Length: 218
Image 1 (spheres, helix red, strand yellow):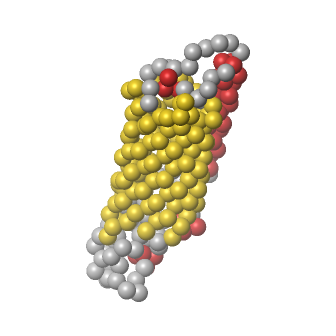
Image 2 (spheres, helix red, strand yellow; image 1 turned 180 degrees about the vertical axis):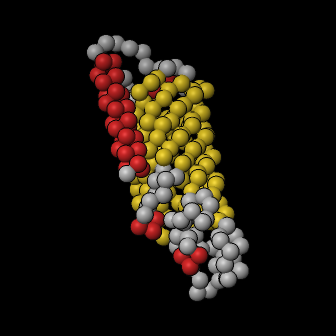
Image 3 (cartoon, one colour; image 1 turned 120 degrees about the vertical axis):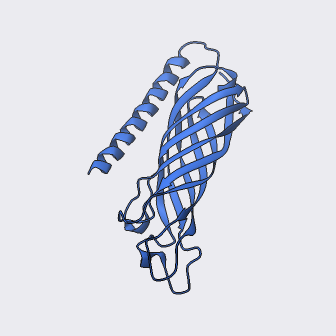
């Protein structure tokens, strides 16, 4: 119930951000305004380092792990403050299972995300911006590397290798270095749904944005 309340509260915050962005666009449209060069581009591509915190099992007997990798995101800014985005995320870590009779002490694991969503900027200055995004799609978790034949992670109480529904809900901010280049940070709640249950996963990314495609200002 607590997780459900947090989920709907997050969705409400995202909806509020999108509404604020739309209202801002309507107000701007009523009077001539100079758009900063950083927001006068149609597309951007982000690439950077990614971190996530993930629990590979339902119970508390197996510790959550740190996973590291990269995030690639493409955004089509259909308006200066509203965009459609496509993101792929790949993270890798090491799972330490409980003591078992199979001789398994640790093994590598990975997750691969493919999601679509929307993004909204609701604070823009020539030097930086702040916004929120909401993505949904699929994840594929590989949790059986290094296992002996005829043994599966579920035998140790860990999720088997499988696809799952995944989401990313959170905030982002750009620090504009030049009209076409910026530093970006993402901080996300990234829930996944392996094993007919859900995992509350934190994810964060830091990297470089390249902006391109001149927008026509009417």
